[in-house]
Image (cartoon, rainbow, N blue to C red):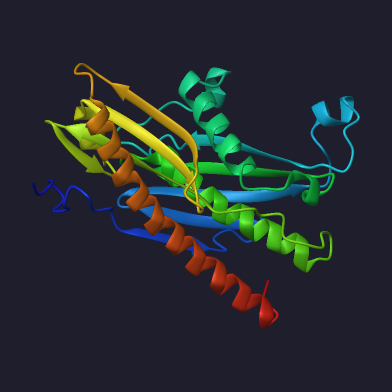
Length: 252
């Protein structure tokens, strides 16, 4: 089966990651997966979060995330959540997912008594915004940690492993990888998978809309997601190698 954008069922959308996208942040990338584009910035705050200070937790850092969609990231303008005075349930769910995923990649003890805030802002949405945000957020976090190391604030890079994510689903009975919006909105089954570079799962979110899915279909979807995430990990590793080469030549 050939999909509406010409891809095969097991084919990812074109993916690009552009590092150093924003001048002032310690880590900043623009990730594009097809027509979905997300700016991910990592900012270092030289303080622990209040809950750690209140609990007198010493020599340990924290990584947290915020997520938002720009009003015209979709076909019709959305109202800013700030103007509504509260975050929507979807936004809270996604930013908690991003934060959990990133913390799985970091040795918080090695980070020291500081917080890294990772902001994921969707500037154009065509499905898979949360998975693109996680994949890009890891790169922004890595760059921020390299900046701390370059500045002499930490001795060792606290990154334990890569983190990346993708979506899979079943449309008209056919399992597919990396759903765009038109596919996601028509899917009988929709799943988001987050994994480490070592092949361990961090989160599996899966829902059937009308037709339940079988164990065989579930296994097929996991296999598709693993193959897709391995491609993302290879791209991240390429970006990280470029970053290390820059540092060798004096450009952190």
